Amino acid sequence: MQRIMKMRTAAFLAAAFAATLGPIANATAQSYPSRPISIIVPFPPGGQVDTLARILLDRMRAALGQTIIIENVGGASGGIGVTRVVRSAPDGYTLSMGNWTSHVGGPAIYPVQFDILKDLEPIAMLPAAPTIIVARQNMPANNLRELVAWLKANPDKATAATVGAGSPGHVSGLHFQSETGTRMQFVPYRGGGPANQDLLAGQVDMRIGAEASQMLPHVRGGRVKAYAVMAKNRWAAAPDIPTIDEAGVPGVHISVWTGIWAPKGTPKDVLARLNAAMVEILADEVVRKRVAEIGSEIPPLGQQTPEALAAFHKAETDKWWPIIKAANIKAEQ
Image (cartoon, rainbow, N blue to C red; front, side, top):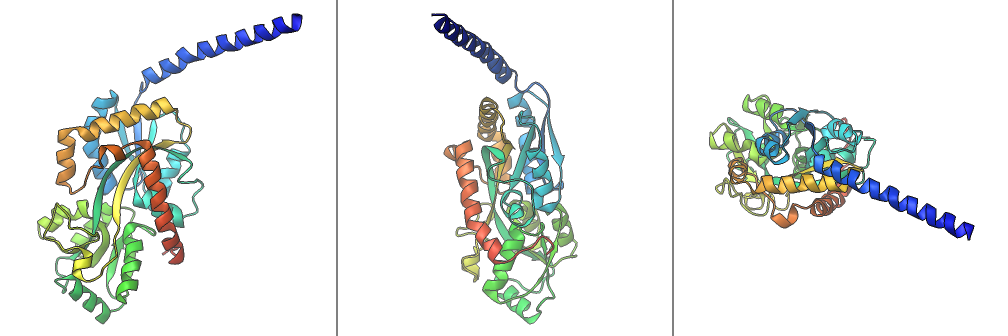
């Protein structure tokens, strides 16, 4: 009898303890966020992710009721910035906003100390943009077929800017070389902003797999030559630019998609709060207009869930990592 009483007492105490934790957890969820949130953009200012982050910034502040701080932490194809988030406290106050380079290509070639699929919690898929092949304004070739002919006549003389080893420009550039029998020199940059600056200044000849949304103002202004969109379908923002299939090098397709993540272990109610905020932000008409103006596309509502981002991220990794490994891409290239 005494043993039964002890067991009942223990059960009662356990239930009472759990009951006290419930209100504390709910209070924590309701109070989040109670201080500024840092969003780590793993590239220098001026690139695709940085531009998108700044478009979302004002609306994000309103949706979350807190100051949002964007921190640009470039290097290692986004790996340095992502590492910082992985090592941060899982409390929802340090987030990772990244793209194909930082969350697919970079981790495939750099010796990062994290698992890109397991050490981050997905929050939401963000806008995506096609990639494009562009060249300096005075490049001799006027279309993609002429460019291929020029590259063949001038092997290893052309320079192609990339956002580091394993970036879309690097991976698709190597694929482009393989498909066309051409050779060029790849010049790595720490971000799209610096790469675009040197292209506009004529310091490099071209960009393959450049973020189309970042190149759009320069294409429209006639400051660069656009040869092809690296997609199956024409780009709604610039429908006069042919697809790479139409331009003569079929099948070399790659897009730059973006997402937002939190460190592994972030409470589910915090993740839900962040996802709800992102869905609200992406539905805002001003945000949608600004995203369209830079040539990006907002994913459908059904693809804005954490589960959709997780599935898509894994699918992209499963698709591209074998290609990167087969090409023997190294961080020093």
